[in-house]
Length: 297
Image 1: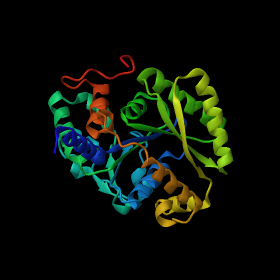
Image 2: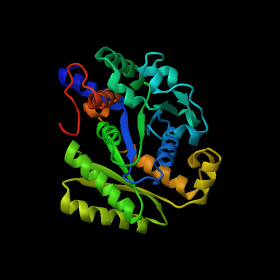
Image 3: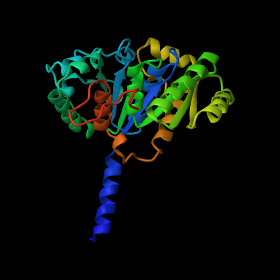
Image 4: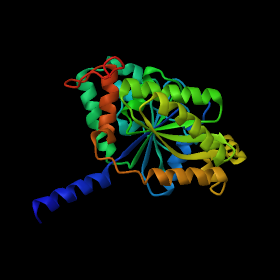
């Protein structure tokens, strides 16, 4: 085998083993981010993918509640040195793994460089165990929300037809593009009656972003109003899992299938290690890693 073929196969192997790091976010609260993350996760799992969810809403994280699981430990226990990452992960439906954070990110500021390096080393093994890393962010544009989004490989913006949702989605993309040089976003429209209404949300957003921001927005689908979704939430189950034939379930599956068609990440931003290096550097610089902050971005 010649050198060119060896390099080609090595690149192919790396692409096949790369993990997708996706954040689901919105400027406005009440857009259904956690439900979206939960159902996309189950959809990916049904397609044979190994999924890890990071509950990154540090104040009101509830992905565990939606799945009906109760974490005994959180990221705080890892940061304090009492547990390893593998100790705190809990299992949800369809083999989905959940990494509960608690209020752990606030404690990152107190970690030594040695502790941070140890944490990142621990993540190296974790990365090899998953295909999809889904980040359920909080609402708004606080520094924590921005850090989680900017460190992800792909950013999925959730919006509805409500005027405040459109305004806040625009604000989120504006801040991420201006401060963190994010140039591409994926739009998923939630809580609409049909695709025509969803496409109108996309049209209104792009009308403004094309004029004022140098970014690209890709429309990836919509999730319709569906009574089955509310029924599933009341049973602490993902609608895709318990009512797979519901219209919203079918749409979640379509979106998940579309995500898997996106190019496999091969750059550093597509790795879990890079995600955590960037996140940690945003709070306190790692040894040898430049600070990552709104001021320096």
